[in-house]
Length: 258
Image 1 (tube, helix red, strand yellow):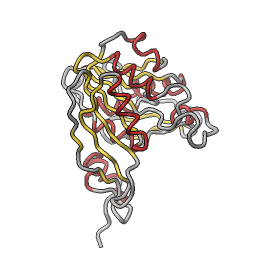
Image 2 (cartoon, helix red, strand yellow; image 1 turned 60 degrees about the vertical axis):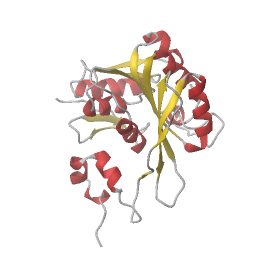
Image 3 (cartoon, one colour; image 1 turned 120 degrees about the vertical axis):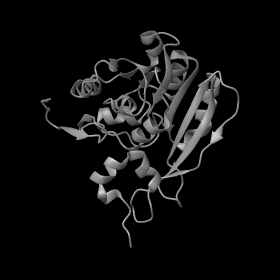
């Protein structure tokens, strides 16, 4: 299928049968999106919503790896939503994925209560006054809580999830106490957690967490996920997440033998 790319755009091969249109000027997806789509579980026939879907990477990755019935992405920035729709169209996924332009804070009004079995989110990590604000508005919105807060994301996820529905999020460990408290506030009981470390001897930089709506208190802490070996190559765990096809096409990321 031919596609007309606009200035600053590129078409990237996801190496799972699908492609994605990205704007180099705005926010391109990173390893956090890949890890979230790997960590999230969407069972056969389930409906999943991604809050703040950006260019649509999470719905596309979930469609590639799960047997979910349909996938929806909610994105407030029309430019990003347009990119996502074009990627969906390019991949002929219009029957499985829908992209909606709208505010996360209004998700329950847009979709209705108890509309999904799964909700995912890779939300802004930084509070509005934490860290430097990027001059690029799209990147600022993606990284900083200028249009929605953690409370907004978790609260709306709880509303649109069915009873016993599952919430999956990737965030920063320095906000873990706040994350746990907010999830329990909205009856999304933390059930599974995994810390992500850049190197084995460094502090964790990401945390993956699963919550169960109306679940009973009990959490499983999974083994640490290490991203890089000492030589800068990806660890076997990360290579397994990306898959064999990706490894074959990216030999520079595979460990160099002595």
